[in-house]
Length: 500
Image (tube, rainbow, N blue to C red; front, side, top):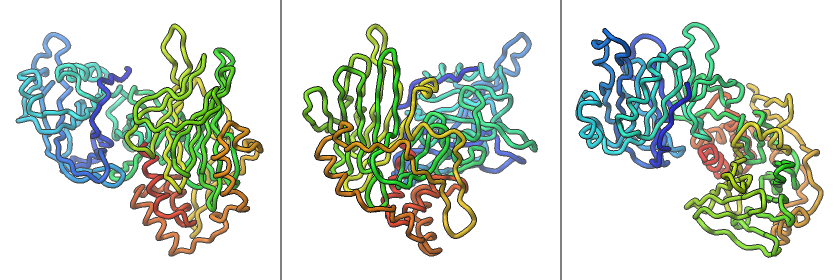
């Protein structure tokens, strides 16, 4: 059964991870992970509403008394860490089916939500998030009744997966909910999306079948790709590698014959660590090409249309930057100047615009650029080429137990472009800025040896910002960058990019 999602929450507090029924004997307590603004204090309430026992046939009235009862009321408090995570401990939840709520204040007692709904809603004030968890098909049908009774608060009702999930978590990048089934002594468990559709475990990094309370949750890569640090490229097919060359490369190309859409994203990797120093988006869908670019010099977006004049974009409000007969590129407003989102649409004449991809860009002046690309629909992948598409059969090389990290590497010569930045569609000023970083030869970061102490120091910094996850490629890459001289800012930016 498809999930029922209502009212995408405007609040900044979410339920990030919990175990609906922790494995083993009855526990005295359990952890629940929340997400919110980094380094801020929080006070709120976690409570649940029973979804078992709704009368569905004559003679079942006695069982109906439990449905809708508020139970497991717990005040929670603490401070979100630098990654915006807070793990709180509460008495163990009653086994599913139930809907778990996160709110500003607590209900006044174990009441039934149908008895005095207005008083209950007044008591809890703002409901930030809610997740419905069924342990049967019938209860999956009951969950929406709880939501509608409570005036459709923000949240999601999970689809049934053949039993009660042992773990529910949010994707650290997209915020999508996933659930892990409980196979008991059988192994391994499977992963499902919020609708109850089974997903491939290999699409996640790290392994999503283990709890990760207090550290960054796994991310599914099938619709998302990114470039972080020196540059570490995570592709749409789930592969990841470190690029060993500097220069300009085709990161992503999307093309359709009808309607005619042609977008290209180029990156320029340069400097001592060959980090991303420039990013260029070119739209040749119309009769006149148009471009937009950003460099790490000032981290300001510049656009160029048919007038051939470059202009700065400083707005924090949604704004269409490039628009052609069959395509739109829209900047999504953000109060932070160093983080921007650009949405790419196929323009419709008589129908709404069709979303294709969202590009998320983080830039620190004088440092480097990180980027993340999210495809709106899997059907568009066949129209994609470039570094972010990935190479069939490419696998990530896990770190060994030796003192040195081992990362899969490539040179991507097939994606390197020999044209100058301005010839690709960039500005002469950006071309000169990027050329100043070129000509350093072999990437110094790869030839520098990190001794055991330097690597231990780098791991401590990365753990501070990312948390530690045994199989996380991001953690390995963070250690690599910091140990190669990129400094703590590389760890800070990597952690922020995971949450962005």
